[in-house]
Amino acid sequence: MVSPSIHDGAALRRYLYASAAHQPVEILRSIFLDSAQRIISDEVVTTGSLSEVPIYSRVILTRALELSAAGVILVHNHPSGNPVPSRSDIAATSRLSSAARELEIVVYDHLIVADGGVVSMRDLGLL
Image (cartoon, helix red, strand yellow):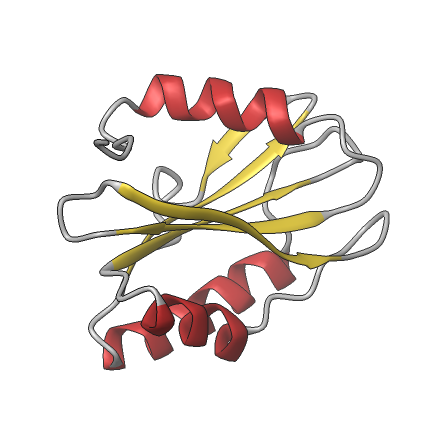
């Protein structure tokens, strides 16, 4: 069986919107990818509160190493309906990306999903 790929960004965003936009609390997911950007695993990493979710680099990168993942896409929702990344979202993503580089793991993106849409931190120039 061939694993799905992330090359269709519009389809990925529709899938993420449908599965995460209406969650009542923030949930952080990691989509782990192989070197051809095929999905190895899509996992809930952490569940947070109404207004925040912790991003633990150690947990995410340990799991990436266990799966022999070449890359990861972070995804979390904002129950507020506003998909704009917070300062803490930006800082945590920067820390994770720096640590991942040392392990030769690529953080392809961090997508924020909300009723207001899906925002890519890469598209905003934050990665």
